[in-house]
Image (cartoon, rainbow, N blue to C red):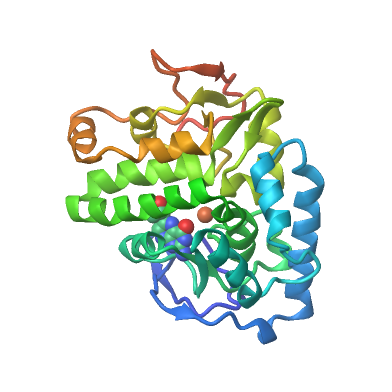
Length: 299
Ligand code: HBI
Ligand code: FE
């Protein structure tokens, strides 16, 4: 993956046999708000407007309401210093600026302490539709609004604590837990009275997937089941083949109640599921046609 070398980042990229890979850094940085260019603010305003045009009727009502409630600026990049007092008051969370992807343990420790790491730089105009790593728009527009919801905020902190524990247990546990994050926090759907709605950050920050995940016949839409999700591989290079549906944020919080160690042990002896499979016992809202799916590439 070539890295646009003019991306305003201080994260080094190492050239390896797999191409440029980010060298993770744990640095916490002040949001350099004064350094943003007119073009950076323009990218934020364009993406914000585009998403807010298509999300009513698609995004969860709580996501939309909380994004309004926190008064996130639409015409220029919001200031963390403006948002933090509002967020702290609502759920005790706060935003911290980071350079980009963090080592997993560092990430989990921040979540466990109600600190959400937000990448300080924003994508370039020629990356509006896709970029390979979370930028400021993905993190701030996508992840932050639901941190205003007390139950989801508790889930994210519980997830962080679970991540710190899983890190101590080992790689299998981490893989299981990463799948849980992927199919809920990043790509989750929720059932509301009027129908299925989006709460996953990876979806709400993407125009294409906001439409695809609800309207395409290709993907499966299956009811949330913790162990089923922990066994299910996923996609990082295409739209998801399967979306999991919760009934409520409380359901997520309750799922993190029990100690996961016995679940990790049980799942370590079982095979994982392909990203596009439908399993016996699934609560199937939609069995996908699989149209356009790539055969290989599940992670
Ligand atoms: N780092 N900054 C940042 N943001 C993330 O969303 C993130 C991360 N590091 C690891 C990670 N996510 C995933 O592996 C989680 O499943 C842990
Ligand atoms: Fe994310």
